[in-house]
Image (cartoon, rainbow, N blue to C red):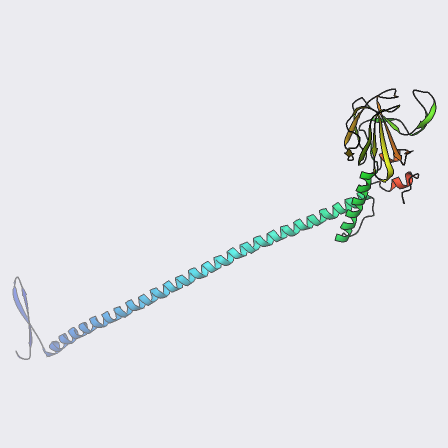
Length: 293
Protein backbone atom coordinates (compact mmCIF):
# COMPACT_ATOMS: atom_id res chain seq x y z
CA UNK A 1 0.00 0.00 0.00
CA UNK A 2 3.06 2.21 0.40
CA UNK A 3 3.54 2.67 -3.32
CA UNK A 4 -0.13 3.33 -4.01
CA UNK A 5 -2.40 6.31 -3.52
CA UNK A 6 -5.79 5.44 -2.17
CA UNK A 7 -8.61 7.90 -2.87
CA UNK A 8 -11.77 7.41 -0.83
CA UNK A 9 -15.07 8.90 -2.01
CA UNK A 10 -17.86 8.98 0.51
CA UNK A 11 -21.50 9.40 -0.52
CA UNK A 12 -24.86 8.73 1.10
CA UNK A 13 -24.67 5.27 -0.29
CA UNK A 14 -21.39 4.59 1.31
CA UNK A 15 -17.66 4.89 0.72
CA UNK A 16 -15.59 3.69 -2.18
CA UNK A 17 -11.84 3.57 -2.47
CA UNK A 18 -9.81 4.05 -5.57
CA UNK A 19 -6.09 3.29 -5.93
CA UNK A 20 -3.76 5.24 -8.29
CA UNK A 21 -0.34 4.25 -9.27
CA UNK A 22 2.82 6.28 -8.67
CA UNK A 23 2.63 8.21 -11.97
CA UNK A 24 -0.84 9.38 -11.17
CA UNK A 25 0.40 10.34 -7.73
CA UNK A 26 3.00 12.62 -9.37
CA UNK A 27 0.67 14.12 -12.05
CA UNK A 28 -2.03 15.25 -9.65
CA UNK A 29 0.25 17.44 -7.56
CA UNK A 30 1.82 18.74 -10.75
CA UNK A 31 -1.66 19.60 -12.07
CA UNK A 32 -2.54 21.31 -8.84
CA UNK A 33 0.73 23.22 -8.96
CA UNK A 34 0.02 24.28 -12.55
CA UNK A 35 -3.48 25.40 -11.56
CA UNK A 36 -2.10 27.52 -8.71
CA UNK A 37 0.59 28.98 -10.95
CA UNK A 38 -2.02 29.67 -13.66
CA UNK A 39 -4.22 31.44 -11.12
CA UNK A 40 -1.45 33.73 -9.96
CA UNK A 41 -0.20 34.36 -13.49
CA UNK A 42 -3.78 35.18 -14.63
CA UNK A 43 -4.20 37.56 -11.74
CA UNK A 44 -0.91 39.23 -12.62
CA UNK A 45 -1.95 39.53 -16.27
CA UNK A 46 -5.36 40.83 -15.23
CA UNK A 47 -3.78 43.51 -13.07
CA UNK A 48 -1.45 44.49 -15.89
CA UNK A 49 -4.36 44.53 -18.35
CA UNK A 50 -6.32 46.74 -15.93
CA UNK A 51 -3.35 49.10 -15.72
CA UNK A 52 -3.10 49.15 -19.51
CA UNK A 53 -6.81 49.85 -19.75
CA UNK A 54 -6.44 52.72 -17.28
CA UNK A 55 -3.58 54.13 -19.36
CA UNK A 56 -5.67 53.73 -22.51
CA UNK A 57 -8.57 55.49 -20.79
CA UNK A 58 -6.28 58.36 -19.81
CA UNK A 59 -4.94 58.54 -23.39
CA UNK A 60 -8.51 58.50 -24.69
CA UNK A 61 -9.44 61.35 -22.33
CA UNK A 62 -6.38 63.28 -23.41
CA UNK A 63 -7.27 62.73 -27.06
CA UNK A 64 -10.84 63.80 -26.34
CA UNK A 65 -9.57 66.95 -24.66
CA UNK A 66 -7.28 67.66 -27.61
CA UNK A 67 -10.16 67.07 -30.02
CA UNK A 68 -12.40 69.45 -28.11
CA UNK A 69 -9.58 72.00 -28.03
CA UNK A 70 -9.03 71.61 -31.78
CA UNK A 71 -12.81 71.81 -32.38
CA UNK A 72 -13.00 74.98 -30.25
CA UNK A 73 -10.09 76.50 -32.13
CA UNK A 74 -11.75 75.61 -35.44
CA UNK A 75 -15.00 77.21 -34.28
CA UNK A 76 -13.00 80.28 -33.25
CA UNK A 77 -11.45 80.40 -36.72
CA UNK A 78 -14.89 80.05 -38.30
CA UNK A 79 -16.20 82.89 -36.10
CA UNK A 80 -13.23 85.10 -36.99
CA UNK A 81 -13.70 84.29 -40.68
CA UNK A 82 -17.39 85.24 -40.41
CA UNK A 83 -16.45 88.49 -38.68
CA UNK A 84 -13.82 89.18 -41.33
CA UNK A 85 -16.37 88.48 -44.06
CA UNK A 86 -18.82 90.85 -42.39
CA UNK A 87 -16.10 93.49 -42.11
CA UNK A 88 -15.24 93.10 -45.79
CA UNK A 89 -18.91 93.47 -46.71
CA UNK A 90 -19.12 96.61 -44.57
CA UNK A 91 -16.02 98.01 -46.24
CA UNK A 92 -17.46 97.24 -49.66
CA UNK A 93 -20.71 98.95 -48.73
CA UNK A 94 -18.78 101.94 -47.34
CA UNK A 95 -16.66 102.08 -50.48
CA UNK A 96 -19.81 101.96 -52.59
CA UNK A 97 -21.40 104.68 -50.45
CA UNK A 98 -18.30 106.84 -50.79
CA UNK A 99 -18.39 106.28 -54.52
CA UNK A 100 -22.03 107.34 -54.62
CA UNK A 101 -21.18 110.34 -52.42
CA UNK A 102 -18.36 111.35 -54.76
CA UNK A 103 -20.68 110.95 -57.73
CA UNK A 104 -23.31 113.07 -55.97
CA UNK A 105 -20.68 115.68 -55.13
CA UNK A 106 -19.47 115.73 -58.73
CA UNK A 107 -23.07 116.06 -59.91
CA UNK A 108 -23.68 118.87 -57.41
CA UNK A 109 -20.56 120.74 -58.50
CA UNK A 110 -21.50 120.14 -62.11
CA UNK A 111 -24.97 121.49 -61.38
CA UNK A 112 -23.43 124.50 -59.64
CA UNK A 113 -21.25 125.18 -62.68
CA UNK A 114 -24.28 124.89 -64.92
CA UNK A 115 -26.29 127.19 -62.65
CA UNK A 116 -23.46 129.73 -62.66
CA UNK A 117 -23.22 129.50 -66.44
CA UNK A 118 -19.62 128.29 -66.30
CA UNK A 119 -17.99 125.65 -68.55
CA UNK A 120 -18.09 122.12 -67.13
CA UNK A 121 -14.91 120.67 -65.64
CA UNK A 122 -13.57 117.19 -66.40
CA UNK A 123 -12.48 116.63 -62.80
CA UNK A 124 -13.32 118.33 -59.53
CA UNK A 125 -10.70 119.21 -56.94
CA UNK A 126 -11.00 120.97 -53.57
CA UNK A 127 -9.52 124.07 -55.23
CA UNK A 128 -12.21 123.95 -57.95
CA UNK A 129 -14.93 123.53 -55.32
CA UNK A 130 -13.59 126.53 -53.39
CA UNK A 131 -13.49 128.62 -56.57
CA UNK A 132 -17.10 127.72 -57.38
CA UNK A 133 -18.11 128.52 -53.81
CA UNK A 134 -16.41 131.93 -54.00
CA UNK A 135 -18.03 132.69 -57.36
CA UNK A 136 -21.48 131.75 -56.07
CA UNK A 137 -20.96 133.87 -52.93
CA UNK A 138 -19.91 136.89 -55.01
CA UNK A 139 -22.92 136.57 -57.27
CA UNK A 140 -25.33 136.07 -54.39
CA UNK A 141 -23.92 139.18 -52.70
CA UNK A 142 -24.57 141.28 -55.81
CA UNK A 143 -28.01 139.73 -56.32
CA UNK A 144 -28.91 140.73 -52.76
CA UNK A 145 -27.41 144.21 -53.20
CA UNK A 146 -28.79 145.20 -56.61
CA UNK A 147 -32.53 144.99 -57.46
CA UNK A 148 -33.52 141.84 -59.35
CA UNK A 149 -36.60 139.66 -59.82
CA UNK A 150 -40.25 140.71 -59.70
CA UNK A 151 -41.68 142.67 -56.76
CA UNK A 152 -45.14 141.12 -57.05
CA UNK A 153 -46.21 137.58 -57.96
CA UNK A 154 -48.81 136.23 -60.39
CA UNK A 155 -49.55 139.46 -62.25
CA UNK A 156 -49.11 140.71 -65.79
CA UNK A 157 -47.26 143.79 -67.01
CA UNK A 158 -49.82 146.40 -68.06
CA UNK A 159 -47.42 149.21 -69.02
CA UNK A 160 -43.69 149.32 -69.74
CA UNK A 161 -40.82 151.76 -69.38
CA UNK A 162 -40.57 154.62 -71.92
CA UNK A 163 -42.55 157.44 -73.52
CA UNK A 164 -46.33 157.05 -73.45
CA UNK A 165 -49.63 158.91 -73.32
CA UNK A 166 -50.53 159.28 -69.67
CA UNK A 167 -53.85 157.52 -69.00
CA UNK A 168 -55.07 160.38 -66.72
CA UNK A 169 -53.62 163.61 -68.24
CA UNK A 170 -53.74 162.24 -71.82
CA UNK A 171 -50.38 163.94 -72.44
CA UNK A 172 -47.13 162.46 -73.72
CA UNK A 173 -44.66 161.95 -70.92
CA UNK A 174 -41.95 159.61 -69.73
CA UNK A 175 -43.03 156.49 -67.86
CA UNK A 176 -40.10 155.77 -65.53
CA UNK A 177 -41.12 152.29 -64.47
CA UNK A 178 -43.19 149.20 -65.15
CA UNK A 179 -46.84 148.76 -64.13
CA UNK A 180 -48.07 145.39 -62.85
CA UNK A 181 -51.85 144.90 -63.02
CA UNK A 182 -52.85 143.54 -59.61
CA UNK A 183 -55.89 143.33 -57.39
CA UNK A 184 -55.99 145.55 -54.33
CA UNK A 185 -54.15 143.92 -51.41
CA UNK A 186 -51.67 141.82 -53.43
CA UNK A 187 -48.36 141.44 -51.45
CA UNK A 188 -45.40 143.54 -52.63
CA UNK A 189 -41.84 142.40 -51.82
CA UNK A 190 -38.40 144.08 -51.71
CA UNK A 191 -36.26 143.14 -54.71
CA UNK A 192 -32.94 143.61 -52.86
CA UNK A 193 -31.53 144.21 -49.39
CA UNK A 194 -31.72 147.83 -48.30
CA UNK A 195 -33.05 150.49 -45.96
CA UNK A 196 -36.43 152.21 -46.14
CA UNK A 197 -35.80 155.78 -47.30
CA UNK A 198 -39.45 156.77 -47.50
CA UNK A 199 -42.78 155.21 -46.54
CA UNK A 200 -45.86 157.38 -46.85
CA UNK A 201 -47.94 159.37 -49.29
CA UNK A 202 -46.46 161.42 -52.14
CA UNK A 203 -48.22 163.46 -54.81
CA UNK A 204 -48.96 161.48 -57.97
CA UNK A 205 -47.52 158.23 -56.53
CA UNK A 206 -50.11 157.97 -53.77
CA UNK A 207 -48.85 155.67 -51.04
CA UNK A 208 -45.18 155.06 -51.82
CA UNK A 209 -42.22 153.06 -50.48
CA UNK A 210 -38.65 153.95 -51.54
CA UNK A 211 -35.80 151.58 -50.72
CA UNK A 212 -32.08 152.46 -50.82
CA UNK A 213 -29.73 149.67 -51.96
CA UNK A 214 -25.98 149.21 -52.42
CA UNK A 215 -23.98 150.77 -55.29
CA UNK A 216 -26.33 153.79 -55.58
CA UNK A 217 -29.47 151.85 -56.56
CA UNK A 218 -33.02 152.65 -55.39
CA UNK A 219 -36.42 151.08 -56.01
CA UNK A 220 -39.84 152.75 -55.97
CA UNK A 221 -43.13 150.98 -55.19
CA UNK A 222 -46.14 153.26 -55.86
CA UNK A 223 -49.96 153.40 -55.79
CA UNK A 224 -49.98 151.13 -52.71
CA UNK A 225 -52.91 150.37 -50.44
CA UNK A 226 -51.23 149.26 -47.19
CA UNK A 227 -47.68 150.06 -46.06
CA UNK A 228 -45.84 147.37 -44.03
CA UNK A 229 -42.54 149.20 -43.32
CA UNK A 230 -41.44 152.54 -41.88
CA UNK A 231 -38.63 154.90 -42.84
CA UNK A 232 -35.28 153.85 -41.39
CA UNK A 233 -36.07 150.13 -41.23
CA UNK A 234 -33.70 147.57 -42.73
CA UNK A 235 -35.23 145.09 -45.16
CA UNK A 236 -33.91 141.97 -46.85
CA UNK A 237 -34.58 140.77 -50.36
CA UNK A 238 -37.99 139.09 -50.42
CA UNK A 239 -39.36 140.87 -47.33
CA UNK A 240 -42.99 142.03 -47.43
CA UNK A 241 -43.03 145.85 -47.62
CA UNK A 242 -46.58 146.71 -48.72
CA UNK A 243 -49.79 145.67 -50.52
CA UNK A 244 -50.82 146.93 -53.94
CA UNK A 245 -53.67 149.39 -54.35
CA UNK A 246 -55.07 152.31 -56.38
CA UNK A 247 -53.85 155.37 -54.48
CA UNK A 248 -52.54 158.55 -56.13
CA UNK A 249 -52.92 159.35 -59.81
CA UNK A 250 -54.15 155.96 -61.01
CA UNK A 251 -56.94 154.60 -63.16
CA UNK A 252 -57.12 151.18 -61.49
CA UNK A 253 -55.43 148.87 -58.97
CA UNK A 254 -51.82 148.16 -59.95
CA UNK A 255 -48.20 148.41 -58.77
CA UNK A 256 -45.89 151.01 -60.28
CA UNK A 257 -42.28 149.77 -59.92
CA UNK A 258 -39.12 151.77 -60.69
CA UNK A 259 -35.37 151.07 -60.57
CA UNK A 260 -33.14 154.13 -60.23
CA UNK A 261 -29.42 154.70 -59.88
CA UNK A 262 -28.04 158.04 -58.72
CA UNK A 263 -31.54 159.53 -59.26
CA UNK A 264 -31.68 158.40 -62.91
CA UNK A 265 -34.50 156.01 -63.86
CA UNK A 266 -33.45 152.72 -65.54
CA UNK A 267 -35.67 150.32 -67.46
CA UNK A 268 -36.54 147.64 -64.84
CA UNK A 269 -37.18 144.94 -67.50
CA UNK A 270 -33.60 143.53 -67.62
CA UNK A 271 -33.55 143.38 -63.80
CA UNK A 272 -36.78 141.35 -63.66
CA UNK A 273 -35.13 138.31 -65.30
CA UNK A 274 -31.69 138.78 -63.76
CA UNK A 275 -30.63 135.81 -61.60
CA UNK A 276 -27.60 133.71 -60.71
CA UNK A 277 -27.82 131.69 -63.95
CA UNK A 278 -28.15 134.73 -66.22
CA UNK A 279 -25.74 136.77 -64.14
CA UNK A 280 -23.59 138.18 -66.95
CA UNK A 281 -26.52 139.32 -69.12
CA UNK A 282 -27.22 142.44 -67.06
CA UNK A 283 -23.81 143.93 -67.86
CA UNK A 284 -24.52 144.00 -71.60
CA UNK A 285 -28.24 144.76 -71.43
CA UNK A 286 -27.95 147.75 -69.11
CA UNK A 287 -25.30 150.00 -70.62
CA UNK A 288 -26.23 153.12 -68.64
CA UNK A 289 -24.55 151.72 -65.52
CA UNK A 290 -20.76 151.85 -65.25
CA UNK A 291 -20.45 148.23 -64.15
CA UNK A 292 -16.65 148.17 -64.38
CA UNK A 293 -16.37 150.88 -61.73
